[in-house]
Length: 313
Image 1 (cartoon, rainbow, N blue to C red):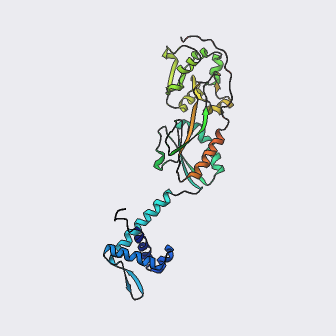
Image 2 (cartoon, rainbow, N blue to C red):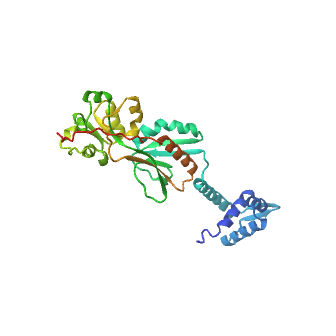
Image 3 (cartoon, rainbow, N blue to C red):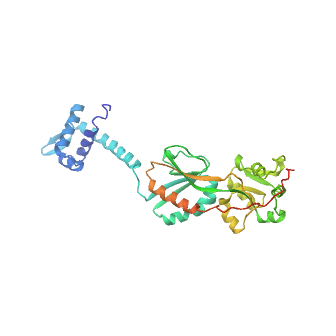
């Protein structure tokens, strides 16, 4: 330990005594004896080479040097106290900052969030949507929800939702084309996200249909699930999409599954948080709620129809 902080205890005792101008009152606040306070302040004065207190009659006063030191230490210990408060375990009630991928937040989390707020009215959720991952240790975000596996030792990661990727479209389009075989999807525009494992080429290869040779069938590539879902709701083609993001639309008949077969690759969403977060109680409540909301989704198995393994046109 350097000489600059060897007298931290003495400085603390002096700071308290300088506020109350009494060794007896300072000792009571510090839960030590008056002799202990007197000894520490004497050690500090010996180290500094100047007196910090003087007596005027029966009253104790600060010397000019003592006044300067008292002002500096008051600021310093206030800063220390604020630092300690900022990292200690917080109570259950308070703010929780949650960040997630834009499509996940917009299409799944936000419509359900009122239920969490109803269950836990003492927790205020601040919700952010971004496709750029935040540093969870920066203090700006408590929870991150994304679809990337995290292997950092100091971050806890829990799987909260796993979904199959299915082809969806508007009912009017399906009625006009009458999808029976995978090759029937070639009669309309195809929409996909810009992620290799969730593309149409992969889906058709899994149906034993030769790879895409005509780019004319690939009408659009979007950078978010939200954009693709908006397109098919408007009747523009067929989109490979996570089932859970359009579950309500499927149940209401706004969209339909164009063909029973899903991609072999599922999409998984994980909740991430710092293991040593001071907001652990709030985080646990939110993670438990996420599990309840996502429980049992997309568990039904669908038997695909036989198809004709025709080549691409």
